[in-house]
Length: 126
Image (cartoon, rainbow, N blue to C red):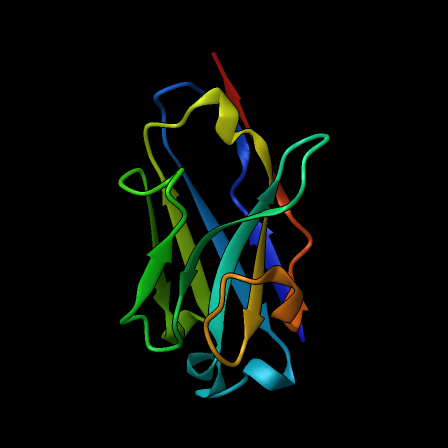
C-alpha cells in the first residue's frame, strides 16, 4: 500500500499550486479506494504537524482547517485513485511539507490515519 504526494514547489505569495496524492497497492486496487477517507496535513519547520483538509471516500463531504478555508479545495477522482489539494492565494505561512494520509473513515486526527505519503515541499515566497 502506497500513497505518493507530489506537486509541491516554489511559488510567490498570492499564487496557486495543486497537490496530488496518488494511491497504489492491493488495498487500493479496484473500487476500494473509494472506501478510504483522505486527509492532507502539513508540517512547517520547527512546528507540529497540523491538519489541513479532509475528504470522505465518495468525495461528498469535505472539511477544512480555519487557516485554509476559502483558499484551499480538496477533491478526489476515485477512478484515478487520486486526491487533490488545490491551493490558492498562498501565503508565506503556508510553507511546509504537505502529507496525505488515508483511513477508513474521515477524521482530523493525524494519529488515526493508517497510511501516509512521503510528503511534498511547498515554499511560498513573500
